[in-house]
Image (tube, rainbow, N blue to C red; front, side, top):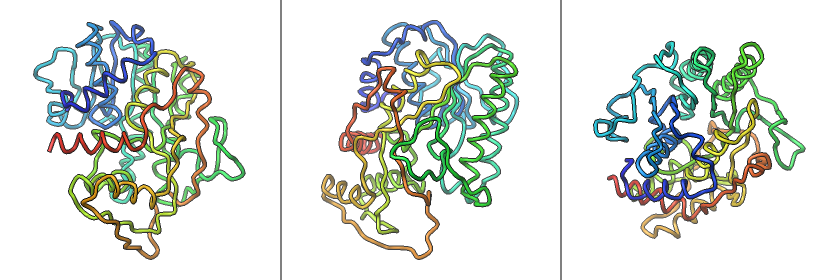
Length: 346
């Protein structure tokens, strides 16, 4: 996966940006959930800096599946990655100083919510507690990937700032994900207050790109990409009126890296590409035009359990933009890159 043409082009794009990567040189970084889409691209960027800039970054990759890590990194050919094969819900031990912890071990898959909501809560709460206990001992700074969903339902706002907060229904099963992310964020605050652990929180909205799960995932972009890659008709199970704004993986990871090296400690940042808001229906027909060998079919399910029920309000990315970030990849180009990647590795 790391050596794929699309990934290598994306990494070249990332390191060409105005980010002070030298602050990462000669550092030791722990990445939890390292085989996930965003985490793997963050790891790939560090690998690419080692390969092209002799950055001497040591990477501890905490994963559940060693085979998956080997598959995406060709681990046996590298000496800059040290695997840690364990559940993040178990205590973490590394016998040396770690400078940064990039904590991404979690699941946002809608299928997991209905199959293992307790597992989601454990990863977000117990896993985060273990990460922070290790950070307290090692003196590492933590970058925690949260979600726009922690804001809940917000009314009367044109854009959501990091200081805003809405309502979540704690008696809904769906809330296992955002509620546990909220608790994880408060753990960050509590460890900073009591033990002086430095953290940065990022609240990400609708990331997509190479490395995403596309088969039987349940999120709209994943499902649409799956239809295109598998040359199937696009099936919409709703009217498609809901709106989304999607952020390509390189824009997400560039933001994460910028926040890692230059973001203010003990702050939260929104990450979202709000330049191309689009309805699900319009997105489906856009992809139909891009890939002519498919049709859009409506198969509307009555009483469908929607992924997110409340109306989308755009995120305010002013804080992130003040660091020098802006989205660079258009929706069309991001989709083309993603489809090309899956066709390339097929």
